[in-house]
Image 1 (tube, rainbow, N blue to C red):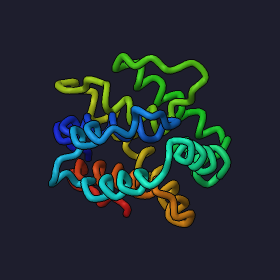
Image 2: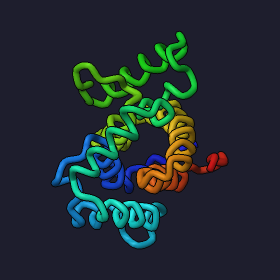
Image 3: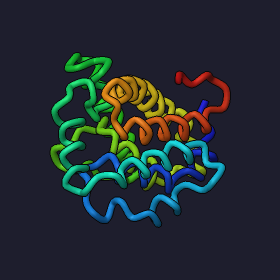
Image 4: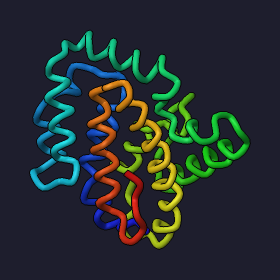
Length: 188
């Protein structure tokens, strides 16, 4: 079960993850944004610091090139969290429909042409949605977190194999989610 109160305290972190997992722009790498989203003691602090330090070694052009090479041209590094498990199976369509309904339930409009299992969009939803005091939230968020856990597990393995700096970012995302789990074991 997910601790939604704790998840809410990490909203700035999810905003950071969303921004870093979208196509990189110059303003995305301002240290102040990272500092605001991650204090010492945050479960992802060390991973995000490592990611930030690695990214500082590259120019913006190199970061953009690396991003495209990683997420656009490597099938095993897809940012679509249900793709790893279902590819284009019927079950994937059902999960996508449920995610879209969840977003709409909390007021998030889907960007035209984007699938609801797109990792930056999922992180943006966790950043922007207001679920406090909503009795439907525990049940509704169970599926969302399960999709994130499963998809990021596969993505993390591929990023590790490719020695990508994004490994540290996704590892930080997983550690943030893990800190919000009340009872169940969270796969590493």
